Length: 373
Image (tube, rainbow, N blue to C red; front, top):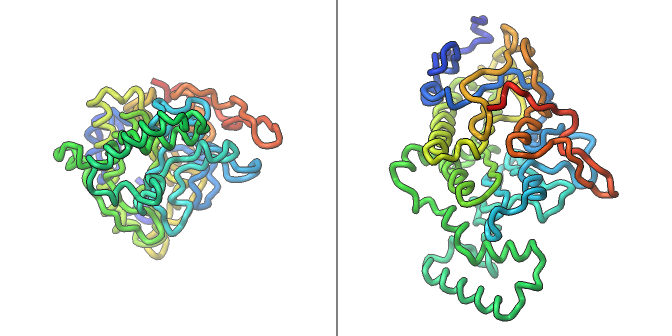
C-alpha cells in the first residue's frame, strides 16, 4: 500500500495461511507457509557487512580476547559430537572476496577445537590426509580399504590412545568414510536433487555462489549427526538493480529453502532441526537512483522453520513505510536466546573467557513465548 518508490515492482501474494501475504517471487513458500514463521520486526543490527551478530546473537563490538563464539561453537563446547567420527559443527560456505560473507561462525574465545569443520569448495582443505585431498583419490574402494588398514595399524600400536580428543576426532572423521559419504551427493536420489536444484558454483562478485546443493548437504549432514551447519547463499548487497537481481535470486532461495523444510518434514526431522534464514541487516525502504536499496539496520525480517518454533504465523510488523518496528520489536539477542532455548541451552549461561572472565552466551536476550511451538 506504500508509494511506488517504497513499494517497488513486486506484488504480494496470498499464502496457505489466511491473512498472511509474502512476495510474489516466493510461490513455493506461499504454498507451505504453514511450515514457516516470519518475523518482521528485528532490531539491533549494526549496519556493517558482518554476519557475526547472526551467528552469535551479539553485536560485533566490546569483544573479549578471542571474540564471541558462534552458536555452532557453543553447541560443540556444551554438547560435543553426536558421534565420535562426526564433527559437531560444519560450515559449508566457500571462501568469498568479502571474507565476512564466508564466515561459518567463529569459535571465539572457545578456541580452535570448537571451530567449524570446513569441507570447502576450494579443494576441501579440512578433508586432507598427508597432503592429498579425498576428492583427488578416484578409487574410493581402495581408499576405504587403506583407511581401514590404517585404523587397524594405529589401534594396534596404541597411538590413538595417546592423541588428544581433537586429534582423535580428526582421525576418526578421516578414516570412517561416513562424513565423505554424507558429502557425496551422487548417493542421493536424482528426483530429490531436482527438487532442491543444483544452482551454480560461480562466486557472485565478492559474495557467495548460488549453491542449492548446500541446502541438501545441510540436511544430509544433520541426518548423520552434525549438530550445526551454516551456509551462505548468493550476494544480497543490491545498491543497484534490486529488482532484476531479485528476480534471479528470490526463486532460487525459494526453491532451496522450501525443499529443505519439506524434506525435513517428510523425514520426521522437523521437530529436531531448526532452520534460521536471515542476513546482517535490512535494506532502505526508499529505492535509490540506481533502482537499488542501501543498508538499513533499523528493522528487518527473518524466516524460521522447525526445531520447536511455532509455525504459520507472522510475528511483529513495521510501520506503513517499513522505516521502524510498529508491533513487537524483537532484538537480535531475543532471537538468539529463543533459538538457544529451542535447542536446550540457556542463553544466559556463563562460559569462562580468557583471564577467567565469566561471559554469558547471549547478553540481555529473552525467550519470546509466541515463537514457541
